[in-house]
Length: 382
Image 1: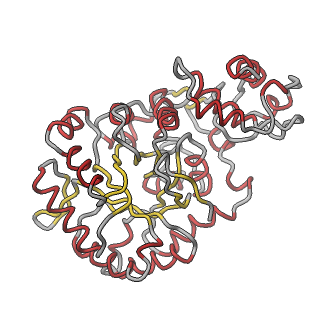
Image 2 (image 1 turned 90 degrees about the vertical axis):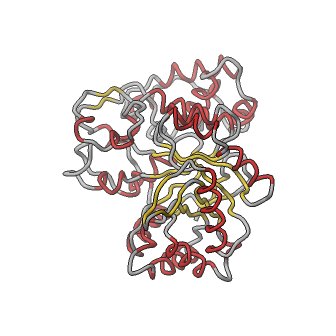
């Protein structure tokens, strides 16, 4: 298992994480089986959005004796009411649910306290005005959460939230189909068939801007819906009309700026085992470029997808990384020092490009790589 730093939190998280959907299976007996496999394979990060008391009890029991081996991302504002899960912005309900969470997990803290499910700007304003963010700050000051997070499907809302400087971790839906869609306050637009009847040219610029802004600010992204609820893995269900593999979906997400971990949905042990094969997959098995290039009604022409097909460079330049850093550098007036230092740490730099054009012949998306290398030399100075 490989590990990545979750933004600026200092937490080193497994690049394959675990969602909690499968914990309810087999009358919650699946909880222990999934955590056993996760623990054995080095998965140290899992998300818990659900407020089901039985699920929380089952997780608490499964964590006994190994709580310190897991990093928990648990949600604030997820409550259990009238026998079902609900999202709440009522402060009293929110506080009671969080106290219940810690008690049932038999822990005094969670590493990431995730403000739950905000897809509308007026809802984000409610979080600001009704004491929800203040409560998250209090929990952090008390050490009961380590870091403040937010879960969202809407790049507009997410950009506004991270712009406050308060959000340290963003849980966001990332896959090559959802990345085509403009911001919407209804997350169901992301998987509605009718939203994929248009012609698309590259990913939505606001989503690209979100990933780059998270990278600049040091906000770590944990990815949800990497398989689009499983639809992306089936040609007859995928909005793209093309089936992707789990390895391709995971690799696509992990190649986006700021992404630290992919929360793989798993209903059973076999599902989790399938996601974990990513750690042993070859470059060919992970390669998503050819699949993306075959999407009907979509052209990615001229847009670097960081797929790495440009390699190898005869001068050793990591072209995909240099391009990613260039995009981060030019997205705002003042270059972040972290971007400059990351570029500086590269073994080979854009100035070494001899403009042979071999990389462009290999690029599936027709990117003007030689022009990008010239621009990177100008922007970074070497």
